[in-house]
Length: 351
Figure 1: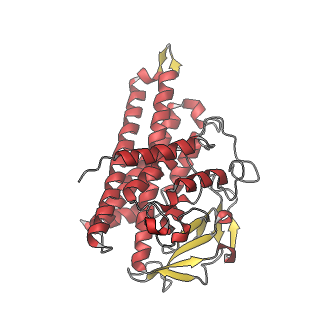
Figure 2 (figure 1 turned 180 degrees about the vertical axis):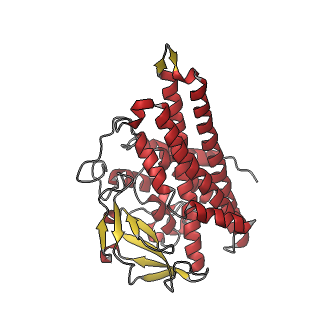
């Protein structure tokens, strides 16, 4: 099994990076603090989504990567998707990218990216929080049929819900200031059933993989920024990067980012191979690999954000440097698509 990226995968990642480079990134030094009216979303933004960036990525086909060519997609796999999401993480792209990409294989009409999709996992109980609600056209809800928070596998299902029917209130100060957050007042009362327990498990597993790829992008770009700053910032007549303590911080950042990247790409390849070989059967090895990748990527993103702030010294704590955006996004994503304890339990059960 060859885990190295192909030339086509590298070209896809490069194309996504080029598109992202033409748009505003919240982590760019000099970024203004969000105002009282909500997060900064760029020109034409709605619900925390940069509409122009979304349109450009849709034209590139990133939402239909895993949709067959007959249904209007690119017919690729998870191995390609993680390259795309790593680039999204590098740029801190804000929007319901993960849920829309997950929904496309189930709802091919969303492969074009003309409609934005959210996903809410209600299997772990309240509170029911939802990102980018004002920007959503469709909501997928993973819920437990009998209403129990810890039901046995086989009792969950996936609903398609109209966001306009939801009763929700805005969270005034979310952890990530670039992501508008709403709290649902109650679980959705009705919706169209579009998937069973196997579909629900696949959605959450694939969501964890894409989130891990995004976190890997955060860890990687923070490493690059910290190293660049350590080379140019002088203290006592020398670049701070020449000091052993700073060298160790940068080396640890690099090791964490590379380990997470290797785990993410290996999990993507395993998931693709298992799906091809077993045609949707139970995938314990691939699921365990995804959980390991999520754990490593979450740790890398959060730890690298803290280390980058430390290396930047007093400037690292300011809004102008933008490093806090990475830390807050990493914190929020570490709770998405399964918490650390849940993934650790899944890995232990597979041993």
